[in-house]
Length: 162
Ligand code: GDP
Ligand code: MG
Image (cartoon, rainbow, N blue to C red; front, side):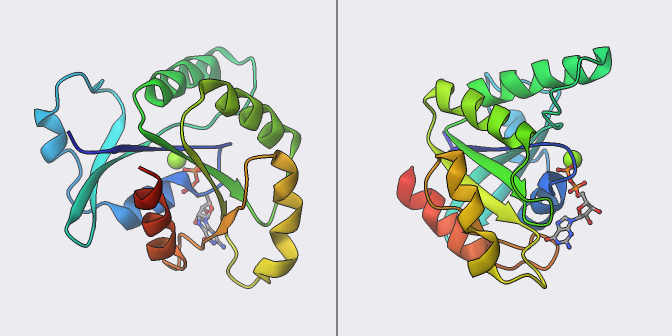
């Protein structure tokens, strides 16, 4: 079985941008994996010789809108089948209440997790990272998904933790 790495976070933090960067053969291998729910965005990525399954999810917005609640239900199913969670936050927004809510929920799952601070392009990582330590999820890793920055370091970190 390939490791399943799942992207979670508020809407608009850049989950789909990262997904598209990292996956080339969407829905390819994944079709052969029994037990994975089909109605989510799956892709296959590769770090050197090591392939992995990446799962994109809708945002956890914390809203009570019925459609958002359906989305969130899907996200929770995706979390349940993950081997490793990538919790994306937005360097431009800083640490928001919604991030603390998600952090608390993810911590309860007991799943291995990496905190990823996206959109550090044109920002000084050493200035934006410290506030994300307050989420209590360890050292945040800076990336810029739309520029491809920090992605290899991130993937190596995940594979070390698998
Ligand atoms: P999602 O809702 O979490 O899937 O977020 P999207 O991937 O749809 O991205 C939301 C917005 O953030 C889009 O306008 C992206 O172009 C933008 N975005 C994503 N990654 C980056 C980044 O690294 N830097 C900047 N400046 N913008 C980004
Ligand atoms: Mg998206």
